[in-house]
Length: 216
Image: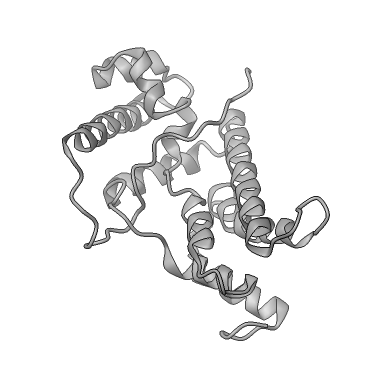
């Protein structure tokens, strides 16, 4: 199997609506409709004939799009079973934490916020995607894609943590530790199939390291 190249699709927003966000323009709505058409076609085909039997060409034909259009939205068919918010919302919220916050407070902010913006997909689509991903968990390409995505998220978190702390990550272990903490929930949900939410992860961290809500 060829190596899967990871590149981020254009971010459609997070899982939770922000009432203050401006209504997207015509171009953004068209992109959202195309993205939804591709995703719906893919999920239908995965359910009808199985993930491995479904090709990108068949997805394009079902969605009535050109082959090149597919790759404007998704880097491979494996990506269709991973929501855009897969771990990245945690990283973005960690970066958005107040500059004066220490590392623990910034992590608590990240796990507690759950992101903002416009919904990426309906609850029904999310449930279908997750169930299909669970069925495909043993497929090698799916597992490798998940590990690559988690690794990319961890590296992003390390870079953000290093910048927040004003340190070099190759000389200071703390940014790497934070990257591991932020990547942990993504791995647990996607690779292990757990259904617990970010707050359960925060509670577990507090118990292990002996922190209170106010910090260490």
